[in-house]
Length: 202
Image (cartoon, rainbow, N blue to C red; front, side, top):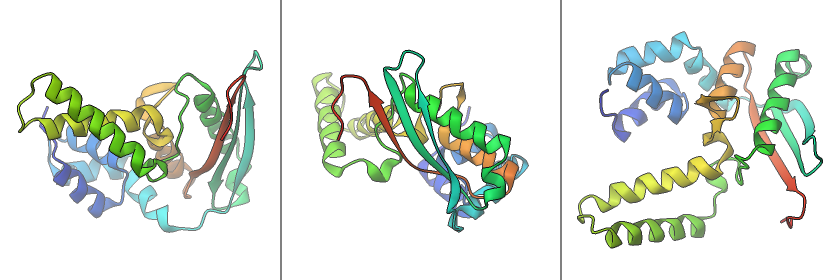
C-alpha cells in the first residue's frame, strides 16, 4: 500500500471538499493516484456531499437514547436542510445510530477537533514526546511519533473521528457523508451530551 502524505490528503480535500479521512482512504485505495482517488470519492458520492458543507442546515432532529439498564443516556441534535429529510426513516435511523454510538464504550468527549481545548493537546503532545524520548527514539522520528499519538487521542475522544460502533471500517464522519450523499443534503451532528450514572456533568 502506498505511503500517503499529508500534502496529498490536503490536495485531494481542496479538489473535492471531501473529509480528511475519506480523502486518505480514497488515496490508499488508489495507491496515491490523485485522479483515481477523486473518481473514487465521486463514485461514493462523497465529493458532491462535501460541496454541500457550506449550506445552511437548520432542520433535523433532537433525539435521545437510554441504555437498557438505565445507566447511560444520550441527548443529540443532528441537522439537515429540510424537514422532509428530517422525517425520513433513513435520517431518523441515523440519529438513533449515532446516539447509540455515543452511549457505547466509545464514549466520545468532543464533537470535532475544534472542540478539543488547546491546553489538552499541548499536554498530550508533551506526554507523547516524553514517552518517545524515554524509549530512546532518535530525534528525527520523535515528531512523527508525537503526531501519531495525538492523532490516536483524537480518534479516542472525538466523535466524528471515531470508528463507527456498528461498522468500524468507517468513521462517524464517513457515516454522515454517506447519508448526506444518499439524501442529497448537508447532514451534520450539531451537539450531544452523554450522561453516565454516577459521573459528574460539566
